[in-house]
Image (cartoon, rainbow, N blue to C red; front, side):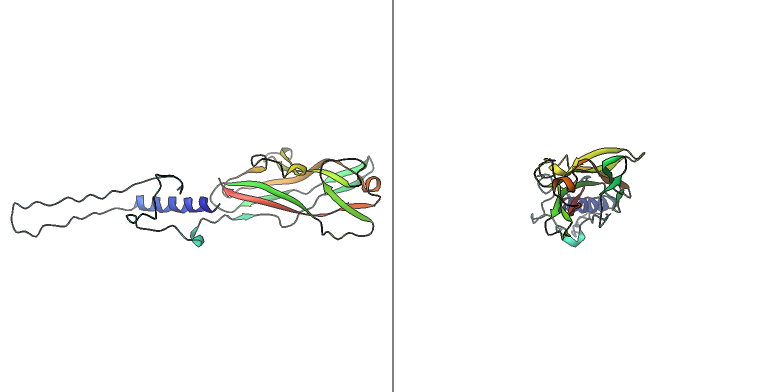
Length: 230
């Protein structure tokens, strides 16, 4: 993300220079001779619109003594600003029509406060093994169901929500988060000042009474989201 922030700032500087008038004066000859000639001096000026890439040979080389200026400091980078939920929940509620209960998750949203399009990715989803349990509770495992192994498991997904209705338009399988490609981990793109929603979903889980001989299964988890300038 740091390189992308640098590229944005360099682009901004280039645009400001391009909009300013440039005056180049040549030194005059003080010789009183009326036939004296004036030397024309040329200044080379490169103009570019686009993100600066330090690996591009055509980009300005700030280590070159002929170039005046310096790479911006870290506090001058473009700042990514997003509003995200700081805590989330999912649970299985008792249902008189289904012995396994009904899965429920609130809807959560992420808002882009900045002026650049952001790519939003779920990078990690880890269980906290230090979760404190009561005597009637067992750990909940987010992994593929394997009946009879003594672990209460749930096949949990992270689901984006369509902008126009409540249907899901992408499911990210959290049981396979460590093996998913970067492309598969992408939730969505956020335009400037845009808000998009997501929620958890599950269609298969085990009952702790049968698998772990406990009344409840629970655990604390940490979700790590990654934001980068598109």
